[in-house]
Length: 276
Image (cartoon, rainbow, N blue to C red; front, side, top):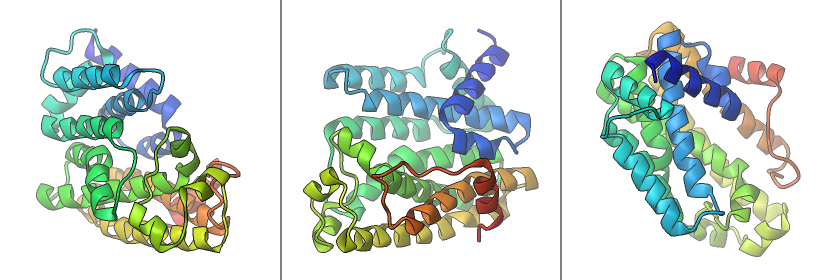
């Protein structure tokens, strides 16, 4: 498989499976857009395997181990691995950052609850912070060490917003990513989640989650001044969409059970323009 064919495939995957993310990265110049699409496609593969309830846990572990091995093996004809290998070579993405992503997927097989934010943060750092760090290498920022820290924090912010949005979907997979000590502090039970109850206790709990997301997002956006203009616009765009999703959840009283939060095209544009 040629490099061009591999990149065409990962761009197709990203456009099909990650509309919010793809909406932002389309502002990147083509080489960076293709590279970030390759990283997304690899992350998507890991996530799909970890979430596949139709597979026995042992088979999911085996397939995730294959993803891990694939980072160091010749890519052969696998479009995603061909593209990722080229990104590693051309942009200096660290394989160990991508390996962290796979380790996060393995954690999803073994754990379905997290006792505290400190425990959850470790998981989010693997499944989302690692992607942020890998993408930061593609953006070629000034001061790469600082950019790694801020990109990791931005990844945590987006994952926190994902966790809030996906509570019902995660529940159906047998998972609760809201920290157990915070559920107890705000007197929200797993039975409340199962029933989709959105009373005062739920809103207080989710306000707390939203405040954490706000703080992480503000810190993570410190990445922007380190980037060139087009990379800055791309990151600002998908971060703005996630900020818009957070505002939408607030406006609905965090009723993520009635419908999955999403933004129309014009709403995405307004969210990006309104990002602070």
